[in-house]
Image (cartoon, rainbow, N blue to C red):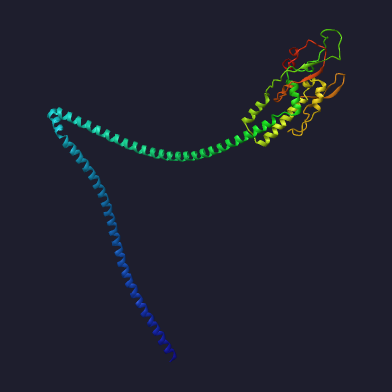
Length: 374
């Protein structure tokens, strides 16, 4: 009984599966029919779409043809209007030509010439259109260049304004530097005690007798030399001579004004070196008497002077001493490099000088500086 029961259950399951399979098969067949109908519909729609695309293309070409024909019609209408307006003249011309074969040939030649002229006009119009396009492109490029140039001009104007401002500031600074340089030059123009003494001894005219070149000569009135004879020499009013070094130096400083601090240091250094060269010049030592040279060299600048102690800027060299041996000596600066400063005028002074007796000597017979330096 148990196998039969199990068999019946299995048979029921098989029957259920067969029913389900039949339903599935029926559904598949219906879906296949629907799919076939859909495919047919799609193919028909594709055909309709192709037909519509073809019609659209034909419509587009028809529109283009219609537009071209419309333009041609307008041209023909204009030609017809032109011919109608020129009809009396054409009829008059034909009447004048006549009706024969020669008149027809002449009219044909005239029409051909008109056609050629029309073609030439069309070609000229085409060239004019191309030239117009080219000029438009050139105009566009020129406008772009103009805009670029305008922008560069604006930037250049701004740079010019800033440069003008800098120039004004530089002018103000130069003016202030010139004022400071003038103050420094006015301060440096004041000579020290040593420089003033040298300038007074060198530039007074007539020069002292001791500044003459040493030489041997006989007395004027007798052969005996009186060593105790003395006489007074009246020194005329001193004519102040302007120094040539100060204006030149000032002009040089005004030309390119460096910073004030460096300029002052440089001027002070050059002045110290010039004064040291003047004091150690070999030619000046040979011209000045011993007592004047010793008194000048022993003096020191006052406490209010701008300069420090003098420096010996001569060159130490080896040379012959004139006695068959060699010794060291100091080579001084050249006399041409001595540039004395301007000195103030001095009052009339008189000096006691020891010299050869000469009762007939006067101020006109004294040696002057121009002949003394030659």
